[in-house]
Image 1: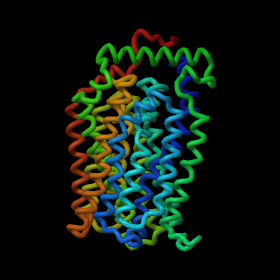
Image 2: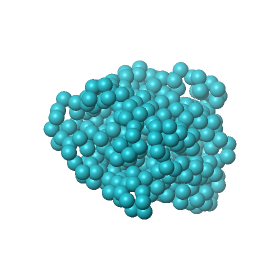
Image 3: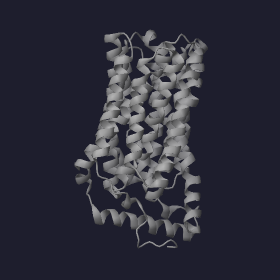
Image 4: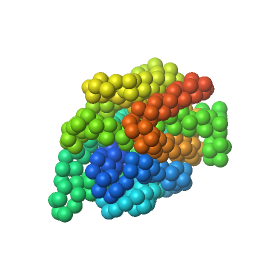
Length: 433
């Protein structure tokens, strides 16, 4: 690797990735803390498992509707302004979850939270394409998305502890959970405004030759993609490959949220306290964090995507389905942790597929379309788990349904074409350029 490339990528990584991880950590925690709140909230406001599953998942319908417009707005106005706006609005609404008093208010606030947060994740994925050449993206996305399992590794025990604050200030523990975990988003929204840099050309923290190298490298990659595909925004939205990738991502999201929203209640069924439930629920996410980082690095090192994605989906399906075949809590948690490796390992590899052939506004639209359609599984997964729990009295049927989603994604990803050469440095860009 040329010294200027090594130096530039190291600087960009150090400046951007840890901060974006922190932002996504807070975003994901605010999105899924409803799973822990449910341990006491459901009874307090009188909602069934089906109603909880519907409310937890309805977030993703409004998220779906506003995803593409939000990401196009980010491309138009810049990441700094738009991400700050998103974080401020979702922080306010996440805290407002403490005010719900029944099914209707629960549904309304979850819908509004989906609108507020729409565009954040695909916006960051698009933003990373403006800073990192293709050969780095799986590992960089892996580090960024490690915030998902880390939010549960750290957030689960903390959430279990906050639930013990019943009666403090006249509020229930689940109300404190929403209030305290919403506050960091409000603080970070201000920090984003002053800290993020929209594009390499604006990065005064890079030396002039570093900015020039990064601009040339990324511009050459964009041209290489446009010479092969050259999709417009409308073409990207209706491209069959984008729609197929949306189905693949649907399966990935179903395995994540389908198990994630219900994991605290599965673990609570072992007879544990709320605090113990928090610590035990963190175990699969520790494994998932390792899987996400190692699998993304391995995929980049070998410049191989399809096989890595397929193996990860297979691990997810085997682990989730296998957890239904055992009753012993320790063995069940081992199976769910094995599945979590696959659930999270697939994510950084998956996002190299659309970014390999999309660029510019088409990338903003295509990434948002994949994320919005795929995230409809954020409704399907929790809802099907809750409905089948009410029908059968246990979680087994729901877990089998979630495992089937992973198998569907495995089959589709193997059938899809993928040109890894589009992720490599164009031959016209020399090492020292």
